[in-house]
Image 1: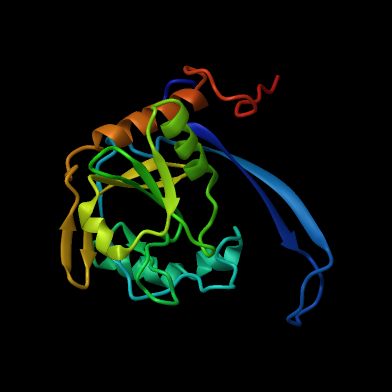
Image 2: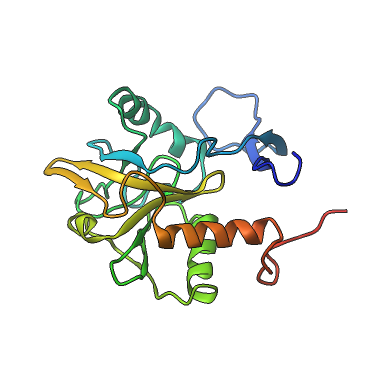
Length: 226
């Protein structure tokens, strides 16, 4: 896609088992492929904050494969996201399956939280995907914006205390969250439902600037293909 249009070229490497068997067993024949596709701007009308809910469903369990980018992990969230969309929510917030007290992730994105004193907090768990976008935002926050960064367990009772909340992933970079419905009531994020919060916007603009070559990238982040 032409530079400056907000669109991008999405590149996805993937691997799949190709054994000609019907039994349940690990594959020992594979195909590794890379597909590319042009995609339009993620936020066609601007990055408006979304409404999400804490779901009763579990996406991943301790000692499972939640930290692996496997098709089954996406499949586990499909029924739940369809149910959420039918009820007017953009996404589900999954809690840890063992205690249902700590925030994990959504079906396809990690969470980032901004505290009222300007710290970036990301949930720590062995059953969530170690997102490259999240790691990039943590680096940008610390080394470009001078923020304190914490990667730690986030209790669900903390949600009401954060100033800004976002979902992060490859396509959107950051999707701001304005409202969370919980079993105990609705949490309205102070940043509001109109625009991306100010710190979240700085993170978004800085990482996007690095991706677009407008801001100098850390060594090894950008590779020129001639």
